[in-house]
Image (tube, rainbow, N blue to C red):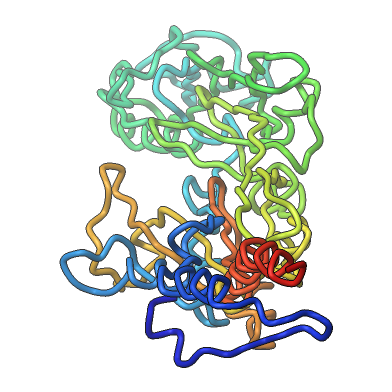
Length: 403
């Protein structure tokens, strides 16, 4: 409140009290002219004007100011959703359905008599793979090299990586035609070099779970580790594969069967208890760090958990959320340089005087480390000022009245 805020002097004289005299008037004038509200009256934090001033476009712009509307809230909420396992890695196939590097292959070759290439060998009928007149030869176990290839006698180098055993068998048959007499080939995966997944984190027991031809999925790995030690709504499940990783809240994974993808040898499944939280400051019913579940909450829920706005102090027009935002969520709207972590300082403003804002608040998702700040209503500073004035003036009035 500057000097211009006092347009004219107003004399308020309570009934039964004599005029205080010039001493009280001078004291009041001195307090008013010094703009006591900013000179000696403390504040809980910046005003709405201070915050919006820091977001004015230009060289001094410290943050980007975005007014929360329903379209903005939905866009931010969409940008917050993790990609998910199926999007990042695909559904996959059961272990054993495709050949991987390091797998050991068992290959048996059968010829119709007279056997021209492999000669007499094991009786095909003994293992049910051929007629009694056919002869079969079991080749030594072959290991798929890092390039995904195996060397098969008389067939040469075969590309096996990422193929089904039946496809490799067909390729070997094609290579043996003209060399063997009516060849037939059977290929099986004997064992994998790393045919297990590792399950660690906040599970009952960390394990290395062997994969079988049944085709284990993410939740199978969690079950093999004894499940979560914490409530499912407070933990995240992450999958690391080939140097990439992504995660989902565990209760989301349970609710979305399409995200329960097949596991591959070498996968690492991590269960982590990482409760998110936001900090509440200003004219609210509760100034505190408020934790929330891994699945997330909306701004509307956050307002409820922090006790709402204080009727006697809060400025419903001045509700702000401070966040270091991912540029991808801003849809190209910026103007503020990202920080060292590549995040953009953003201040979201919500006007709770507008009833429509409550619909937007139901879609605006809170993020870990958000700061919610509610400014004081302008009348609050005036009330503080009047209280201080009264404390300074009334003793003078009392003294004059006694005289």
